[in-house]
View (cartoon, rainbow, N blue to C red):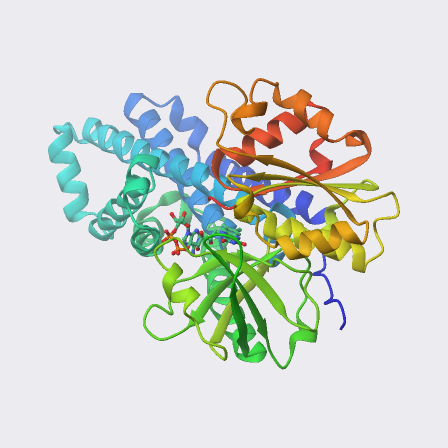
Length: 461
Ligand SMILES: Cc1cc2nc3c(=O)[nH]c(=O)nc-3n(C[C@H](O)[C@H](O)[C@H](O)COP(=O)(O)OP(=O)(O)OC[C@H]3O[C@@H](n4cnc5c(N)ncnc54)[C@H](O)[C@@H]3O)c2cc1C
């Protein structure tokens, strides 16, 4: 049984991602200035309003491209930032981009109506119906606004994940429809060869990244790996542990703590994708995940037979050992968020990385029957690799919300300091769902754990 090779990770990648973002924004600004954007600001009200309208459209387009790129699963971006941070970033940039698009429409309509001396409503109608590419741009913008509205938290909560995701895919169509009017009529796109090359190049590059990394690479990976389910067994309350194997597992580059997006090809419902973290250190012996089966798709997964074909995308995530900076290991998880943490503890044993004493695992559980992967935890404790601190019971409603009621009176920072005496020399991995992860991470940070030693993954994007 051999450990699988971890994916390559270069520290400078994070800086490179930041550089790409700032460089693209700077280029956009410079191109606008070169096209007389600043002079237009001083050439009368209508011209100034139109110039600002153009600038907001340019930034809206650039941010639209950057946020699509963020979700394209380009390995060097995904590995340096992490999927959950990228998703939060995508959300923030997405909303900003839509607002800028609205500002662009409003300003340009006002600006042109001043130039034409027309009523703004008539101007808007005239622009949409007569300017080249504008009608489809209008349809594209309407689609993008629909995607933004359905992504607002209130709306999102009311939709099933699959319905929301399907609607969200219309964003690609929206972006595609909004594009041509810029290329036909946008002076900032056409005033110089540099501008045309920049915009055409950016659109082409982003489109290529999406096709390659979201379609071609996952399909190639699944058809090469040919993974099949080898067992499905109940684990704790409301969860199952699924093991998988395939003929080319030794070629996979993956670390404990990472996740794949799985599709279990059972027949109807096979298209439903599930991001699941590995719940055991990945070896040539097979891959293992532990999944809660109380959700919409749980029954289908729990009834899955041995031999079921599995399609995978990934691996993704930064909750792996390569980001470690300190000698001690602390793992803080809630419910099934413990899955990648168990895998990390196993990996530390296999790699001989527990020379400074056992890892500490803090488990937040609703009841002790809910403890997933208990047999693995018992084994790690038996061999002296793990010390476990259990926080069991309903959540505190009056004190620190991430603690159970009986400890809730304690400030979170004091609780972590008490539970983890070696906090100053430890890397802390946190995993779970929703605001719980953010609350624990904030208290750990306040207790002195620097961001470089704090590695969190949230199962709720
Ligand atoms: C990075 C990551 C790692 C995860 N690892 C595990 C794990 O190891 N074990 C585990 O039990 N759960 C894990 N989850 C959560 C798991 O993916 C969902 O709970 C599961 O897909 C829900 O399946 P369902 O259709 O039965 O439930 P539903 O009741 O239909 O879904 C419950 C919620 O799960 C989320 N969800 C469902 N499908 C997806 C998807 N394709 N992408 C993103 N979110 C989705 C949605 O927020 C949804 O509201 C992980 C989630 C993420 C983001």
